[in-house]
Length: 505
Image (tube, rainbow, N blue to C red; front, side, top):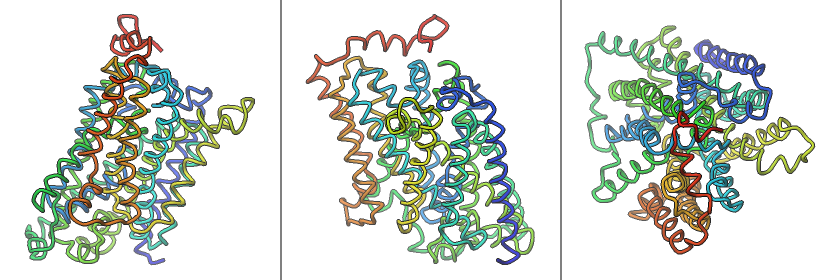
């Protein structure tokens, strides 16, 4: 290993040690089942917002956005805008009522609302599927980062992230991970902000050069909105997936169960909007500088590593390597925090619906939870090691599409419409899940269909979300007699502020 790789290696080791240390410190607060699943619902808005920012700003945010903007231009700004605006939709429609439901997980909410074990089972299956679909690009991104920063083989990053996440999540559950993720948000913000400011100063000192000839020539940009009707469809479909998918992401939703009450959930969401907006200012700066200094990355098809490589391209010597080490630390923190949040969400569902039965009722909840954690991490890790090249931001976008096509209709209708039935929910989940999920599988398998077929598969949300809503409503109307008797009382609980004495859990 060359001396140039030393700062990157030190950064990875430092983030790993800090993550394990904070997680171990948080272990002393984890004693009960509620601690493991929802941190006993005592996480205050500021801490919770930092933790949500830590887990939400994934590999796609830290690495993928800058690469997409470098290649695709300003049209790709829909990714950070959509990822942020999704919290506004969540704030208006879901945050407070979901907290008042008193559930631990999305399947808990589905069963409590509809009184159906079948809906719970379908929701559990989808939580695991969406979680694993989101975990794969985190592991792939870790491999890309270590390969770029220290020249490690592509399998090393995923394995390290998997092991650290296993140790942290197994040791303390949600209570422990909350502290880790809050720390990692501020580390990521620092790691992307400080190098960006230094690089802007370097660019200014170079005479403020404009974009290279290659970056303004034909063949460089392939914007989402390009290509006539197909491009316009793809843009709108992406917007739908990002705006509506946030509320259905299991690792996002589970954090709102940790707030003390519905008011705390709303305050948390407002704080998250501010924190995400502060972070997303900076990836476009890297993309703009990449248009000046990153021609070769585009030629080689390595736009995803722009954030990691730009300091070396612009600032030679130890200064460039030092900045590379800092952004490497931020990228590695992104993989660890998002993977931890996803693992918690998937593990909670597996614990309640799978591993508790495997280990037997006499075994402790902690034992079942740790077995579930191992399953939650190992399966997507193996997939990440086997599959070929995966576009980090695009893969995460597919996870949003699946979430928007399944849990978004379930939550919106379950919270705001008394007429939803178990049969309607099952039919809608099946339609949206098979539609968007099938498209995601075909994309990951490398299927590249031409024309409109390819566009419909690459961006399924524009047809799969309306399909899921339509099926859920139509079947519910056709089976109105199956509407739960407790639906009216349950909705009153969801929409009554805790200060009025209702909705306590």
